[in-house]
Image 1 (cartoon, rainbow, N blue to C red):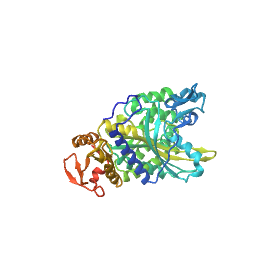
Image 2 (cartoon, helix red, strand yellow):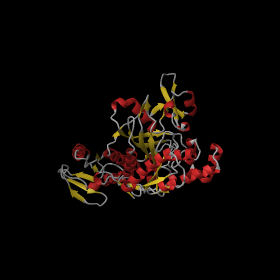
Image 3 (spheres, rainbow, N blue to C red):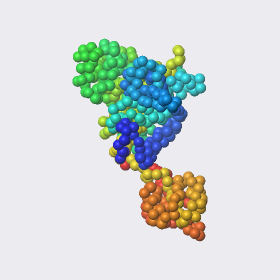
Image 4 (tube, rainbow, N blue to C red):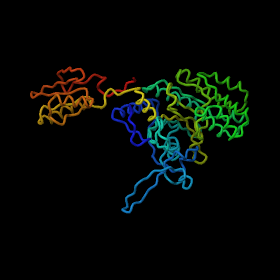
Length: 455
């Protein structure tokens, strides 16, 4: 069970909890690299103008200010950057996601990158959220993106979804669903029914699960001037959800003809058709998915844990064609972001998985007397040289006390060496004690490293 953090919104893990988080990170890294994604890291700080140039997210940004002390030492202070960003776009702020900094990184390093560029990035981000389960002010994200130079084949939208489905399937989490829509489909449809403020309609539809269809309809009418018929048409589109490509017929049955909508419909059909074949049961076409950020231009994705929908999306993203540009040169991209901290918090709070022990150490080398410390270090070095995590006791206490110390630490094996140089190792879980040689002995495979097992 995860502890309640002393500073709300800034979670910290106990050692055994951190082992679960590391398992999640290592698993994601392994899957991403198997698919050819290269790791990068961008700076934590961007200019406010850079961060706020797409989407209405200024209230979430932590700004930075530097206070000069009399003695010449500088200290950093953080605060909400909404007002700062409007008055000074050159002010600095902590990044609220990894996509906007990545777009800047691509533009600045375009001459050194081979396109299409495949990257993964695992870093902390900061948002001025109201802390609650699933929402923190400091948290870790794991992103993958593919960016092209000039154009990016739509097939990468399909590939990104399949990679994420594979990565999430490898984690100790419940069943999940990638809920996929296409902004072209939605925007073309809204234009087709006469709602030209498509960004406004998308923002209203994005609130559907929070406030329900009746209140969304009221928003559409009061804020965007929609008629009853237009509002109901928008809600009918958002109500379509299928596990196969049958959504195509349902959309066309609504009787709205629009070229952009048809393009988005075709793209979404390709994604769902591939997913049905390669990731069955893990992807649905959900035409209520809108994504609030303005930079998405095509495929959009949100992912929920089945039975834990109240947690919100654990993975989201989509296609962005205009986020990164340099003069007339465009760098379209598609990517998805996994909320690692949100996932780990749920794993821990629901006991969905646990580490097999609380420390990496597999063996504690006991001391017969204080003079045996050097010989114990030789044993430990021999074991570590073969990849066995080993500690040496600090005191030559009674063996019973040294065994209790190992037990408290979660160390499964204790190593003994007598005055004649004979070695034995004891499994303190079973009490079995056997002769051993530091040059050849190894624990069973399941005890060599900490494992994280699904409950």
